[in-house]
Length: 166
Length: 81
Image (cartoon, rainbow over all chains, first blue to last red; front, side, top):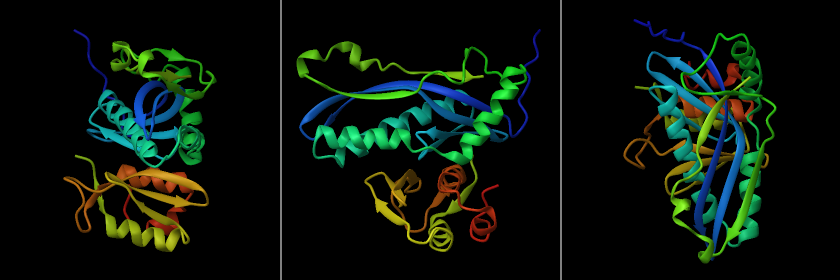
């Protein structure tokens, strides 16, 4: 029988995430592909995990375990894109707003994210079933206009995953 | 359940610790803007907008770190730890 080890309160997981969203703006249909965004998952108390955005820095989300916290974070990310679409009169305005959102770094948690890499490298921190990738994996966000004819059923299955950085 | 703080205490904290900030009302959340930077996720509270709702502390921990608000200021208004 394997014993499940409960991580200590304060355990930090440096994450890299990749998301794809397809959404409507004011007069345009758009795809947003975020690659290797950075976030820090922290076990703040017994059943309280928070994912704090670093790039993008202006958001956080909660769940009872790392998976649930990440799912909430991913949902919030999409909601913020919709907010930005509401506030943008053109594709160019939306593109610029999304780039700014992604580029604004949470420096406070960024420092803790870098610190947390060491524990992953030493093998002290892991998440079951989550692969470990280099912390310096290139980060990018692309916003591209789509034509209705280009939309397929594949657009309903967003490209979503998160990985542990080291 | 996550710990919470009162939204009015958060606004008071920002008035004192981040003077010049701007609160922006969105349909499902508050945004806080300062110095060209935007924090997107201050919730309205459970079940939508209410007077002085409880806000999960993690959102505000994210906010204070994002804007670099010092602990010796914010801890006078909100308990985030």
